[in-house]
Length: 356
Image (cartoon, rainbow, N blue to C red; front, side, top):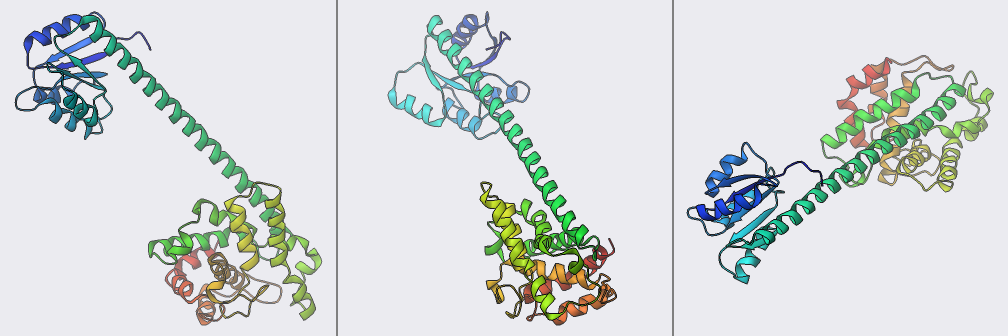
């Protein structure tokens, strides 16, 4: 414990004990002798002691009432309190300890015993504070490392997503826009308490960034086919549709080589289910209704809307208003009706994002 002088407040309505206590402690500690509990709380507005010596038997406000008030205030709750008493009574001791006192000292004081008890509790209090500071430092370090890991994960995902987008150069900015569509839909769902059961266990910090990998399966498609001018033949389309399953398998492969992580779990669901349709006519699994994970239902709207407002070799870009009408017309068919209502509320914001 550092050599700096510690501060003790001694509370006792008996001036003899106040004087005796101060004389014993003043060589080593800064001592404030106070004659009442009421006066203690006035002093505590200006001084934060390292320890309080508190007499039990005082008029107006006794020691038990004082310690209850101390422990109910976050500013004073952690200050160690040693009770002083002229009566040896186990029941009184138990009551004091129950209320939060750290020790009992009986009057008249034994100078050596009083000093030893105080020294011990000062050391213990110092060690507790140091341990708290150490734990807080560890927590800060852990949070910083966690942030670094999250940044690294997001950077890796972003690099992979950019590679996919570079190869599939038909829709520039698709990854960024779809993330923003997802974010505003998620914010709306949460604010309206919709799909709470599905969302409650999600780590939202990883949800939107993980959506960057929804088209990662396109890595397995030849660039010539991926960027073919004009529509795919039925055979080509059947082949391209495999990218949903391929994406899920690529992410599963990453999971097997790591300890697994929430962002990978979300990414796999996005990849596997963003082409499923509410009426069961989608692919690859033909899932229907709420059997489609919420991530996939959300991504379906974001993905289709962005394709509609983008210029492609086989079509001109639709205006945001035209894209909105198409999304609304697919309510209950391609898209989750609840999410279409959410989209309709956010249509103006989707339009703003579409201009990025």
